[in-house]
Image (cartoon, rainbow over all chains, first blue to last red; front, side):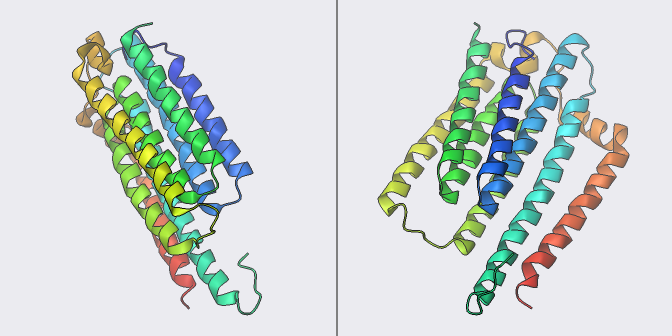
Length: 107
Length: 167
């Protein structure tokens, strides 16, 4: 990481993003927005890991990048949970459409 | 405050502003545009600033794929609420797309300025795909396998959930 960037700056930004994601999950009622908030929280975790990684590389240069490796894994898991969330949204919509005539709640 | 520091906080401001705009609007389309076009492109710029080029590319691909899928689901699922007129939505889209394009341009410029090019600016060994691949597949092989299984289970589960409404 460039020495000009404060090592704590990525962590502050990550904390703000995590807080916004938590607010989105608890405040918004839309399932789609809640899923997007979860993606935002995952991105905040990746940013924190990359920040730690950059700090580690600036102190002890090496070819190992554990933070970025874990970041790739977190992005993979985020993609998986995003797919499940979108599948839930589609299933909920179909159940709601089918039960609308019978007065059935989707949940 | 150096150039890299200023660029970092500029991108951070764009990210937080896009996330706040997405949180305060009631439309899922606007939220997804604000978060997955503007916020994520600025986040890619932050990753470039921090020297994490692999994560930047992975995040860009992830957001492009998830964003496209999200737009498809929103289009298929959501019914028009009538709370926002068409011109209002298109105005928002134009503004946000312009911001996203500006952030992409800034990210490209960052990559061209040597002193802001993350790890390369300090003479450190830039993390390459081979380094990340070694970390992921060799040092954390078990975690990678477990993640692959989770991804497979999630894919099957999402397909099952999406088909369930048809039966």
